[in-house]
Amino acid sequence: MLRGIDVSKHNGTIDWEKAKSGLDFAMLRIGFGGDISSQDDVQFNRNVSECERLGIPWGGYLYSYALNTSQAQSEAKHAIRLLKGKTPTYPIFIDMEDADGYKAKHGGIPSRSTNTAIVKTFCEALKAEGYKTGYYCNKDWYKNRLNPSELDYDFWFARPGVSSPDIACDIWQDEFPETGGRWPGANTSAGCDTDIAYTNYTKQSVVYAPDGAPYVSDTTMTLQLPKGNKYQLEVQCDAGRPNVVAGTGSVVDVSFGSQNGTKYYFILKGNGNVGQSSGIYINGDLCFNTNIISSVKSDTTQGIKMQKGDAYMVLLTSSVKPSASLSDKGVATIAGVFQNGSKANEWLVPIVCYGAGKTVFQTQVPGEPVTKWFTIEG
Image 1 (cartoon, rainbow, N blue to C red):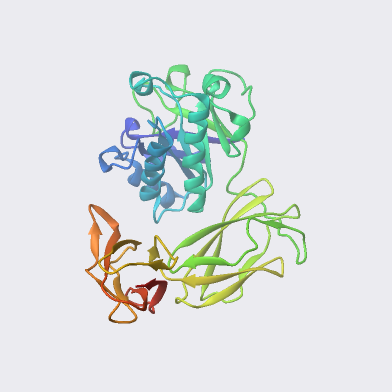
Image 2: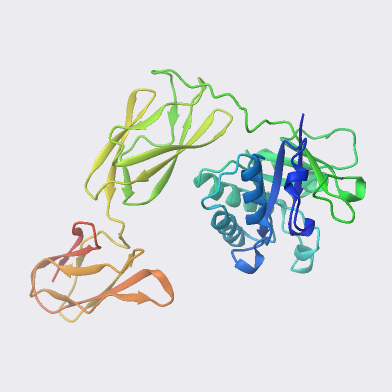
């Protein structure tokens, strides 16, 4: 049995030197609600620093105010922002209760299906970044506000004041301050939340699948991976953790993300130059190829026909301002590359046709070759 505590700014400045005695893990509040810095937990960074200094395994949670999946996306970004550069051993949970009545006061607690979708949105975003993840709630929420059968994530069960949890869970929150929860160094005037973990996240043995072991990959088609971008690969393998490697590691970096039963998640990052490619091998077999493509995205790749005087607007997506050009003169002209309002990563390119013939629309960003997108026929 692993003993833990869950804490937030409401526990004040914790004396972790005192708290570490007998403590197997700590769950640290990251913050609450959407991705606004004023909603960060002001003790989170210190709590992480102290836990890592003292060797206390830790995980995190974000108290959710989400009423829809769009707000859940912002909450996931909130957690990911604060987790950057940190190494949690335990999962990152979304706290789905309405303890302060916010949801009830803002249109009512969402439906089961919406709450379930909120959990999925948050957890999938965290999984895509390589974190273990899950959801937290009490018995009422589990039975009446969620569809747990659809949630294939770790479960942290709030069920204080009973001798044992009556729903299977990975972590059991066994005491609140009101029910007698206490922990040296972390008590408020009333006490401290305490927990019991049934999953030992720090000492799970890894069973690796042998070469040739059967598996199912979520893709076998050539993967077009923009330079610098990531792709989460799901591989189901009954024989253990599959061996996933890139044939050319300098082109595609492969790292293990997380495990959910016999499903394993790997993060593929395109580190190579545009035009390079690498095979992705699973359990010794070539499964698919990955091509590194431009980090610029165009909203169209289909050829277009224009009459003299016609105008056409291309929408580009890029983290830096791209240049745009036409391969041949005399057919059309580009009026410039303009930011799309306040959207930092979107760029508008107006094209005006003034002659007959064909030309190719192409873009370029520093460090990448010219990318050809489509043909304009005037």
